[in-house]
Image 1 (cartoon, one colour):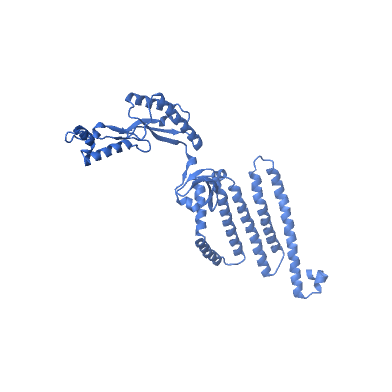
Image 2: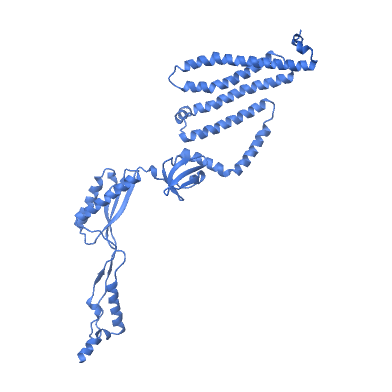
Length: 416
């Protein structure tokens, strides 16, 4: 006696309808069996394992169980569908479909497990280095995890689609064409994404660093996938595409381990050799006695006889990276140099010019006015005062144009 004959409401229906309703009842019964089996396995397996994991001191086993639990449910669901398909007899088409569903659920559980495993393995850079031996920047890990997850989901979806009898070759080719079109249309975006990976992996700067490029300078506030935001000295915020940063030279002033001090001081030409030697020695002692100076880098030398001064070059390295502290130290050094120069009775030179006017030869027994000033020295700071020299020049011109003019009054007087 068949099942349809045992059910009164089925016996009154046509034979075709009886088969459809009977198959639906079997499917519902199969789903109930699968649901019960899944919950039974979960309670019998996962709950005791979680109890054991809770007694350990590390949280690695807890994360592993979290990554296994849901994929295991899909795996058990697929296995239950396969068992039910084997026990009950359906039509060939339905049997083929349920077998495909069972395999798809099992594959989905495996893909889901690998998907969760990415988070567990890529938890931090130390775990990645311990598992793979690769040293990866911490900021790059979220981006890499996202890329790997997308790849796993796409590959899993293609495999599952293939289980239902579809040819994925054409689909993959279509994805390739679409991907090529998207890459051409969004090449700038792709370049910025690759620029982000280069910035994070090479680590030329980080948030908080002060950088200088050929176009701007400022403090890095954010490094994004597409662009980097930099706060300039005038407090304006500029967003720079990552591809532009990777293609240009970037100077990171926050990575300095030392700051260089290099400048000249000029002394007047009345400084004697002994005074110069004493000055050089006191400058060296003063610099070497300072706290933040690299003693081995101190160099103080009398370098040249310049046009207006005796130049002394001072070179030293500060073991400082902060600009404000470095500037304050330079100010103290400048004041100490002024005190040393003042104590030695020396003076700082300023730009000067010497003007020499030669005496003109006597003509017809007459002495030119210019002979009264044979050597005139004019010094200037910003502008040379040549008023006296101009007057003398005028006198010379007058004498050359009219030699008798300079003594014209004397001749008349002598005539009287």
